[in-house]
Length: 432
Ligand code: B12
Image (tube, rainbow, N blue to C red):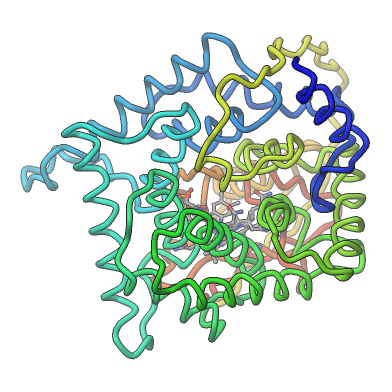
């Protein structure tokens, strides 16, 4: 390291150069443990299990997975190019695989950028056109009067703009305008649990546009919207210190880290959030690979906005697989969980007995095997998403909400949540 490099390093170490929202002191064993949880997922290379977010998270972290990484990116490329560039669904019924969504395509483009690649060539250009078309369609769905809603979500809309931006691809002012309007009027961005995540993602799209100056006509509006996003996220801080909840805090910090608008409020809020997040790392809060992938960059003081000019030479520690802990061969203890279904008639209520430590998905399976309960799921980057219950499929802009009775929405999905003895879990069909 040269003289200047050493000086910067020292200053950085002292915190003089660090932004107050950056986490500077992290326990490297805890980070390693998080990284190790991603490793098994990197062996899952089937199209339904590939997850570009995992690749992005790892590349922006302080860790690397050696040869697995290149192999994973290669699989992502094959899968995404194949499914996105094949002709539109043929009518003969063989085309059962769903095409990646707008957000998934955007995450794939972020993954390319995380490997310091710019999307290009004939295939690459087609992917960019496709993403632009997705955004145009969504712009149409939102409508001239802004009365409609995107078919996916403003979260995915933001991801789309961000992905094009880090590849230095310009999107039309009118496309950016829809997101600006949504933030200015808080339309559909502020539904309970998804609001902070969506605000953070929208903010990162704006940060990228601001830094790259791709839409100079919108400069002032972008600037103001960023200020607004920052305010909204700070306002959503919980008494414990989380922005929204523990799982939206990583994205919120990714956004706030890049803030060019330091204020006393921001300083105080970030100190509190960092402490809360660091405390949560001591527990088993972060198990889900998607959540880990959004968290790891933060623990390395990086955000998706850094994909404008990623540092692919930065040294990263090689991850070794976790040493196996022997399974305990004790007779399992059983717990009782009450499963309740509401929002449809007739309603349903039944007690299920499962081994302690079972997931909610295990509970649902048990209820299905031993009674009239029925459910189905759809794979997503976050894991299995509950799509139908007792034969009732959630319709457009509806979903099966998971709650701990009487009225606490769960912060985890069916595969990750582990109910306790005597708990009542409610599945409620609601609009969003
Ligand atoms: C938008 C959104 C929703 C929308 C999705 C509908 C839509 N058409 O977009 C709605 C409101 C329905 C929703 C529901 C839920 N969500 Co949500 N959601 C998000 C959000 C903001 C963006 C997801 C996204 O578009 N990703 C990008 C695309 C490219 O990835 P994707 O995998 O293709 O996206 C799909 C899945 O993410 C799926 N989905 C959305 N939420 C969840 C949650 C879980 C656990 C699973 C398995 C799937 C899933 O819907 C997306 C669209 O099809 C994320 C925020 C984040 N930080 O990731 C939270 C987030 C993933 N959701 C979360 C939660 C907890 C839930 C619920 C379990 C809440 C509840 N108590 O019921 C339910 C899911 C219940 C079920 N039926 O299985 C948490 C997950 C935390 C964790 N530990 O894993 C997040 C991180 C929000 C948070 N900070 O708490 N969600």
